[in-house]
Length: 135
Length: 135
DNA sequence: TATTACCCTACCAAGTCAATAGACTTTTAA
DNA sequence: TTAAAAGTCTATTGACTTGGTAGGGTAATA
Image (cartoon, rainbow over all chains, first blue to last red; front, side):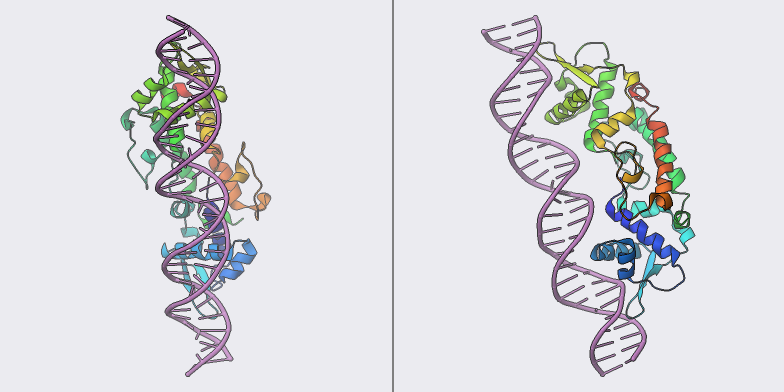
């Protein structure tokens, strides 16, 4: 399951996507409109900024805004950033791989099945962007 | 990601599947062969028994064994039992559904996408059984 | 009837999650 | 130039989960 943090992040990003190129949006505005605890949202936006998805402007008239076009921000990457691995096992994760203890990957039915699951999932998440979440 | 508990459970179940109809298998044997902490394994097996997947016999010559044919035990159900929801959002879960706060399900792009992900995943997990994990 | 082996309860350390608090910088508009 | 606006940073909190340990109770069977 996605953490609350990830869910908030998607809500915030979708909101920012609807305001793309309209200039900076206040944290407090996002917080109100999307009902996300203000300080929690601060942390999330900061994290997204450090990852290069958002940029911000300080002072009067400041706020957060998408750094890249919403069509360039993949859903899969948002999840990886805030939620961690998408795969169901460490030994089938592309970005967070860890070797299985007690399981020979060449010879493990679970491993093989989880690769299938991973690919089916990524086939969707890697091909969707913020734009696809708009409606 | 699947919890350690779920991973252990799969290892144990696969082991029991290879011994299906050979009589009860000792916890200690599974523990050794699959390198699962003994007492932790006890809890897991007990949980699986309560859920009706396993049965056990006490006393000399006792142990655990599959209650149903391995081909009748769906991977999806094992995950739900020990790991919880398979879906990425509560509002798209079939067995652990919870309404989304701050998201109108009829009108939420994230919701729709996560239904797709869920279906792609279940399409695999609901159609595989312990037998398919054997090799 | 002694063993064997399952069953149960409780506990623990470490980590994560969700959220809050408060102070600090930087920017910019007046 | 200066004060308010707004983002940045550090830290702490409480509740919960995870992974694992300990020890004894209970039932069955050879």
